Image (spheres, rainbow, N blue to C red):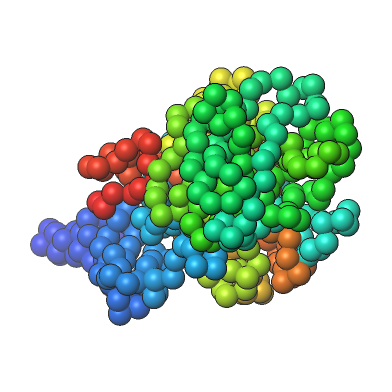
Amino acid sequence: MPRRPAALALALLLHAGCGSGAGAPPPDPCLGVTCSGHGTCAPSGGRGVCACEAGYQRIELVQCLLEVRPSIDRCTLLPADHLFNTPIDDLPVHPSSAAYVAAIGATTRVHLDLGMQTDQAQPDFYGIPYNVVHGASLSWPGVNYGSADSTLDWDPLRESDCAGGGATGSHPVISPCLAASAPSPRLPMPAAPLVEGGLETDPAQPYGDHHVLILDVDACRLWELFHVYPRAAGGWDIFGSATWDLATSDLRRAGWTSADAAGFPILPLLLRADEASTGAIRHALRFTIPPAAIRNSYTWPARHLVGSRTSTSLPQMGQLFRLKAGYAIPPAFNTQARAIAQAMKTYGMYVSDGGSAWFVQGDPDAGWSQDTIDQLRQVTGDQFEAVDLAPIRARAGWRADSARVPPP
């Protein structure tokens, strides 16, 4: 074979080091990104990420749309800079992501834990309903903390919130709701509340979540109760209650549970048919995993742990997951399914309780489509990844007792 002249060989070598060769700079990930005309793109982790201007929010990495805060009636569901309302799609993958997904179930399919039946007397009343009340004009009935179920053998009052005062008038929040400070505890229970799983009248009160979510739209205060049963003599037996001022990002006290085992509020993380039908969900979601897959510790923003397993290959209560950036939402997905899948990408979903793997909770609503449930079942566990929130926790102004996300 004839040998190339040295000058030609050198020229070829220099040409190979330019353009697309090994020494070439990577392409600009913000090239051609307009941020919908309402933001500025900057490279982050090899991807372009838009910082949206005031009044706009990032829906996808490079898309800025008019800001719409999650709300019900006159109340916004937590501040705009609350972690649950903050895009997390640009944060790094958690170092233990693969182990966490394997522990939950890599081939297990997503299940939307919701339904289309709205009559709570029917056996197919699936999902977690919520009640909207006007606390200023409501009669606040007294409630009894406790249960006839002997397996519930701990004192719920130590980690519960309730209200004082009379049936009408002022109702100051009392926390913790101890007998000494709240001898006559009250809650804004409507006359005929919607209860998860329907009204259970068994006097033995067998264990069940039986959540009651109550949004007082006069005060924009959320009350969430669990293990709720009607008393034969009138009134209600409950086993615990928690409240949140929806104008703040304050978390529950460290170690305190709520109606959610992670100490979270449920309603701001709940899938709602009316919201999904708009085509955009602007907040994170909640989901359950098998109890055997939960480590007995919690991570911010969770406040409570369960179980006894200590393996670091298991996710903690409150661990955040998201659909991978590379997951392409199928074009055949309907409006609701696309909105849910995009929310799983942009805002993620938090381990909130023990239950079935990859069960994502929503409300019972006739507006849900069976196609939505069927289409999301195409998504499997291996299409998710755990998210590392360490970069947020490292920001100036971050506090462990608040879910506020400080600016970078």
